[in-house]
Length: 135
Image: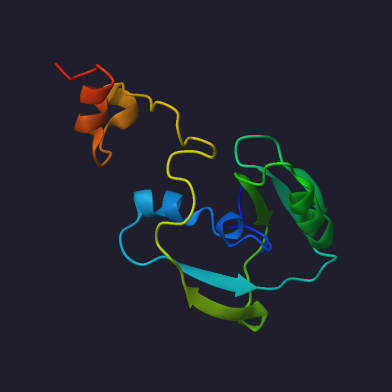
C-alpha cells in the first residue's frame, strides 16, 4: 500500500503516538510528530496494520479508530503527499512511547529463533533466555 501512513490524533497520547517505538527499532536519531489536517471528506484507507484496510472518508476513519475496543495497531493511509499548507506543527516526542515488536506484545515471549532475531539489538540475550542459542 502506497501513501502516507498516519494515525488520527486521539485523546490518548500513547495511542496516537504508538508507532514511535516501532520506528525507533529501524531508524536512528530523533523521531518527531508531524501534525497535519486533511479535509474530513478526503478518502483514506484505515485498518489494523496486519489486516485488510477499508476505504472511507477521513472523518469516518477517525470515528472508526475511536470506536475500536483496542486502538493499538490501527493506522490510516493517505494515498497522496501532504502539502505544506496542511501541516499544523512539528513536535518532539518522547522516544519510548508505544509498542516495540507488535501491539499487545507486552508480557508475551518473543520469537527467539535466530532468523526472527537476526540483526536485532539484544538478540543474543533473547535467544539465551528462551533456550535457542546460535550454533
